[in-house]
Amino acid sequence: MSALGIAAFGAYVPRLRLDRAIIAEAHRWAMPSLKAQARGSRAFASWDEDAITMAVEAARGAIAGRAAPAALRLASTRLPYADLHNATIVAGALDLLAMLATADVGGSQRAGTSALLQALRGTEPTLVIASEDPIARPGSTQELHFGAGAAAFLVTDTDVALRLLGAASISAPFVDHFRAAGRDTDYQWEERWIRDEGYGRVVPAAIAAALADAGVSIGDIQHFVMPSYLRGAAPAVAKSVRFAGTIADPLDDGVGYAGAAHALLMLAGTLETAGPGERILLVGFGQGADALVLETTGHLPDARPARGVTAAIADALPTDSYLRMLSFQGGIDMDWGMRAEKSAKTALTEQYRSAGQIDAFVAGACGACGAVQFPQLQYCANCHAPAASFSPVPLRDEPAKLLTVTADWLSYHPSPPLHVGFVQFDNGARVQMELVDVGAGGIEVDAALRMVFRIKEHDRQRGYRRYFWKSTPLGAA
Image (cartoon, rainbow, N blue to C red; front, side, top):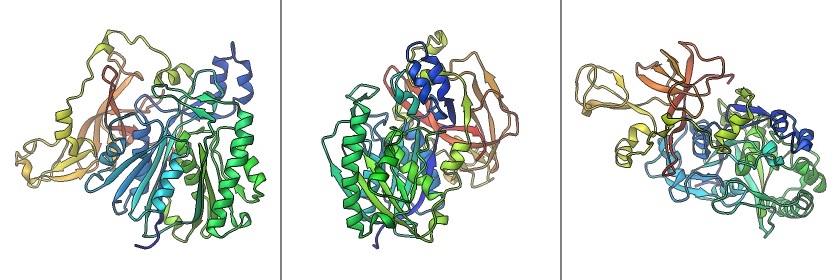
């Protein structure tokens, strides 16, 4: 196999946005100084989004129309399961399970760059996804600066749009922050020390080693990509290594710092504007640093997704409630009334038997009359032909529109009202589904829809999340 490189990429940012000024105003009674940093908006995940669902959405853009990879690496420090393969859930939703090696990568804010570097130095086509929804303590500066998002890169040897020229990794016992097992939020050390001793010493050393490995100088680099929620950290490092090119957009306004996913999210954003033959210096920082020197090729335009970082940022659903974000992040224990006391226990045996249909949202087309139906029954609901004649028909990318809709304020729902309705797919399938990210203005019949992978139900008693597909109105993208 020839040298591997990046052939395609995708990105995802949750639609929900909150102006930082609203967060600062909520804490004004105790933390009036936050107002000075409250510029722009940040993204936050809905109650039914997490690192797994965001990973699926980003990966859909990277694998569309491409050959299936042999491996999948999922990088995050916020994966929902400690002892259940999160990457396998992602692979199931992408319908990639057959003969696929999956791996979860975590433990550092540079998990995304480390996973990408390992894939680029590997021997088999690999889908690398970084996804994160970091949570901060209320009233902290991290709460203002954090965001959420995911990026995915298909590493293969065909139609390579971005190739690795050289790289270096440094490991250092530098504890700028930590999160103990069982804790939700990080403990953060003093910012000036992190800038001066961490970014100021560790990162330049990694950059120098990567440039030497690639056989180029800093003057040969056009784009510098380094994430940090510490404002000004990237320009300071760029100045210290005498970089004179373009410093990548930190995606501060509209996204916010997406933890271990942010380096790859910024790389995806850079690739939307970079030209062929340009070089990119990508840095990941955390208990050391990764530095990758990459070069674009003439295949770059073909690698861009239909829905990338720019489109995801534009497809915003602004909100005005700080308490809403806090509720979705588990920061307040709401009293939802007796209707919320229902059991959400999942029958794992039935879930396994139906995995082929549910995970990847696959309907069946009757071999006798052609009717498409979901779920697949033992016989055709139209002509009663046996299920043996069915052929699989994925619905996740099928165009659809809204046939009926109900906004239910009586049933328990973590984000009321619960919107449900019949979705009419262009191939004839008709499925009753939940609608998400509807917005305050509601949604009208005949609205165009797209399918999104979300948490269907969260069993808080046992800590289990059941996933399924929902529908959402097409936005600005």
